[in-house]
Length: 234
Picture (cartoon, rainbow, N blue to C red):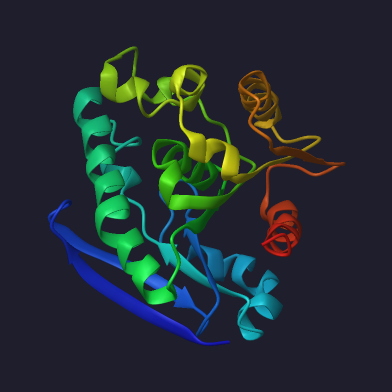
């Protein structure tokens, strides 16, 4: 299984960004890490290994990007307005630097995005903010209401990064062309948020799969089971 390390300077963030890429060729999948996770997390916790067959058979190519959570959502040392603004710079880095690079490298118009836990929020928020970029969205064990990170602060930037708030009013034809999976499990503390998001999508007529795994908890064994299943749907 081919693995490569990449690093570049992001002009949007004013810092270097690191990434691991798995595979030589295949449909591109951008994976976001969990809370304050790093670009090597999916490899360390076996998520990449669960996708080995798809990678080695050139079905998919996985891009594992770094996070800046310590300077955005989890940056308690910063005012909430700065936290969410820093995330917006991260979003611009992904949308304006990374995704065009992936599109060019893989010769595709749209990509797949996914993530576990907080990475699932990142994936869903990116997909719903930029639906013209995304064909497949897989969240695994995620919650989607970001207001608890804001210490009561609220502005337009918070609104447009909080899917339960902006999605009821969002309109884009690309929502209806996206394959969406909301993955959770019976004993996942994030399960209610997935039911809530599913209901929002149902009210808008956006097709999706609310995948509730029996007996599972909010942990990597469930996500390692989900991930290859979702990849098989590409």
